[in-house]
Image 1 (cartoon, rainbow, N blue to C red):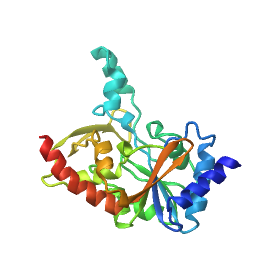
Image 2 (cartoon, one colour):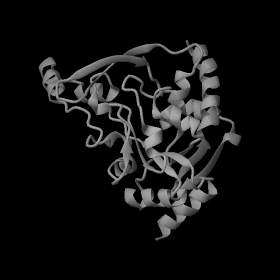
Image 3 (cartoon, one colour):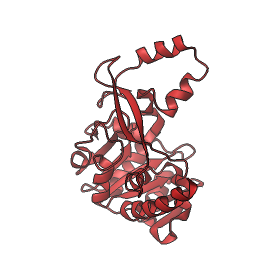
Image 4 (cartoon, one colour):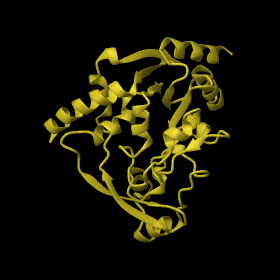
Length: 257
């Protein structure tokens, strides 16, 4: 199939390492490829020693997320209360991740896939290091030092932005946790274990509104860029990108306040 051959060639040209750890964000609309086909090409490229990771976030499982606020806009207090009471709890083995796209849901539902336990910002993975990298995701730490994001950083993972831009690069959130001075925290709530069982905790006030700006400021030597199915695709090492983003954010964001 021409499209899969083109994808294989692009992944090789952009420097995806066989045997490595790869976190992928993607938009498949207009590629002519199914999520299963893309997953299979990625796994073939990584080989039997490699590990494929995707974000499997569930902002729908919260009443403090922008997704919830958009969903309830214009509702009455009673309608919001009824919706909140009906929201199902997060179940690592069953809760879908529609906001993350078709490839993420495909990886999540692949037999043998592993998923981390955070009720809002979980990850799904397939491959040799999947369990190791996703183990021990603290439910009170979205994407910081007690999350798979830090494990991916330590593993020298690569990041692939397949037909999407830096504005969705979740690796930059780890840079937020490492900023100096540290950003403020806020309260989060989500449903776990049973319907109506809400937990509340404080964590970093995550903000991705300037990720596109941060990406544009990354030195070009840190990433490779190719086009696939009419849109840009980027690949880069997570460590260098997070370290650079941390430095940029610490200065750039302090200038904005």
